[in-house]
Structure formats: structure tokens, C-alpha cells
Amino acid sequence: MTFVITNSNYLEIRKNIASNVEAILNMERRYMTLLTDVVLQAAPQIVADFDRAIELLPFWINYQPRQRGRAYSGASIPWAEVAETAIGSNIIRAISTSDLQVKFPGLPSGADIRFATNDALIHFDVKVTGPNDRADEVVASPNQVSGDGVSWQEGVMNSPIIVQGQRTTMQFQPELAPFYVLEGQILLCLTYFLKGVYTVERLGYQPISYFELVCVPNGLLLFDGPLYANMPGLLIPGKDEKTFVKKRTRIRLTPLADIAAWRRALIWQRIT
Image (spheres, rainbow, N blue to C red):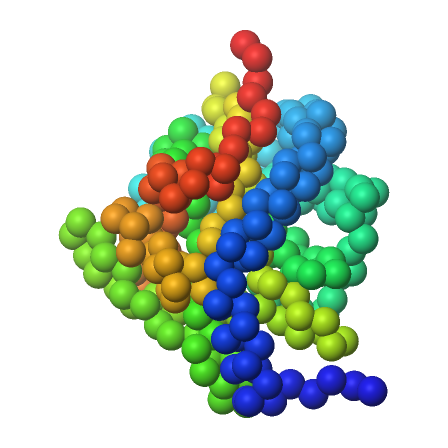
């Protein structure tokens, strides 16, 4: 028999999940450990493939990725697509060959990598940062952060939130649900970022310096219950607070680790 989600049973499920903060925390921490193992397994191949971009340079240098910054210097090349190929593909392979029993449901919005287990739907996004950007933050789109799921209007509705910076304030609208129901199974929404920080040795040779794995709290922890979003400096306006319709938020990693040290973990570092 197919389980049909309705306003009343959705709100009842939400109430039960929100009432057990410790269970949410335990699940986030457990998958942090599991994903650490996945990244460590994939790291040697990621680094090798990432560094191969310089070997292929003659085949792409005349058609390099478009510069997106407003005042770029030309001293480095945008490296997001290298990360998508070298990091993202190897992570998916490592997840598929791990002990995790996973499915890849057709969810049309979310992180670069999204997969379901028997108790969670995990959004796992890859971010890379060069020497011109801050290494101690991730810039998260609305579809990379789960909300409070406070109401139901033919589907989950999250509350918009006000994000306060030192100079600006903006409204941020989380788009991920705090949990899902798939084939009658309740799956908690968990969000993780793998942050690769690279250096620029010379144009086209931009090797990874280190990886950090980051766990951002579920929306019921951020915006309900413990209200982690109120941690000073955790969420601040993104780069596009005055331009994009769907505005991004910066998540600072030091305040995140102040919530719990395990939410930010150095996974791999190049030995020089």
C-alpha cells in the first residue's frame, strides 16, 4: 500500500522528529564519520585526477572556463569544473563501493551529490576555494540548506530567515525540507560540504592543498529547537545579496565548529 503524505501526517511526523534533538544530532555525527571514511578512501584518486589538469593544459588553455569575478586578475583559472569532475565523480564512486546501501532518487533540486540510505537523504556538495577567497566559509545556495518545514501547502514550506552581517542584512529562503518520506520511510535531511582549498603555483597548475568535511545542522536544529542559526557569525549574507533573486548565504566554519568540533574536520592535507 502506497503511503500518502498529507498536511496532518506531515505535521505529526515533524513534531515527533523535532521533539528528539539528540536523535538528529546522533544521526548527523554518525554520517559525518561514515562520509569521512568515504572521502579518505577517495582522496588519493581525487588528488591525482585534480593534478592532471596541468598535463592536459595544451588541450583546453585556449578555451578555458569563463572568469566570473568582477575584478579578476587573470592569474588563476576558475576551478569549479575541475572539482566537479575530479572530486565529485570520485566521491560518487567511493559512495557506491562503500558499505553504505544507497539509492539515488530523482530529487530535482539539492546539492551536487544527493543519495538516500534507509534513514537519511543526504545532500553532499563539493566546494573549492582558491587564494582569493576565504577558506573558512562555504557559500551555500538555498537548495543546499534545509529549513524548518513549519507548514504544509500542497508540500513542505520553510520559513524565510533574516541573515545579518556587519554591514548588510538580507532575507534567505532555505529550500530543502528537514525530512522526506520515500516509499513510506522517513528520511532525515542531512547536509554536508566537502571543501577543497587549492593553491596557484602557476597558471593551470592549481593543486589541492587540503580537504575539510563540514556538517551543517538540519533545519530543525538551525531554525527551531536549539536555534543554532542564532550563533553569532554563523550565517552571514552571501556574495550576491543585492543581485540574485535566490540569494545565497555564507556559512562560517569557526562558529560552526563552536557548536560542535566534529562539524568541521580536516580530512587530508598535502605534505610539502
